[in-house]
Image (cartoon, rainbow, N blue to C red):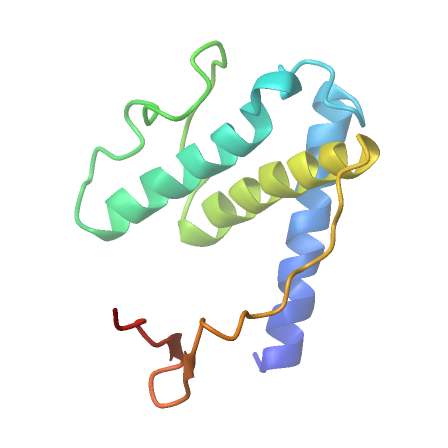
Length: 129
């Protein structure tokens, strides 16, 4: 699969998951306590378990991570890394949708002059004091 096909497939999978979530909980995710950030917490919890499993923890999905909403049931693995990452991304996008509907500013800030970019590593260079 080339990069364009992979990118299209990721978008297809995420949007399909968002549709599943909307069918289960409504387009506004009425079942989630969104005022407490449960959608974001669920997504981070899913990624936390993926990260732990990738680092050798075979029991990563046996118990919900601490950040996972305590009043949610059904924490589980959705299969391999891809479906678990897709579920996490859908939760995060649902939270972004909610924030946009609440009027939050979606403006992405540019890099500040003190945030130097190191093209050799692709990572921001550390700022020396």
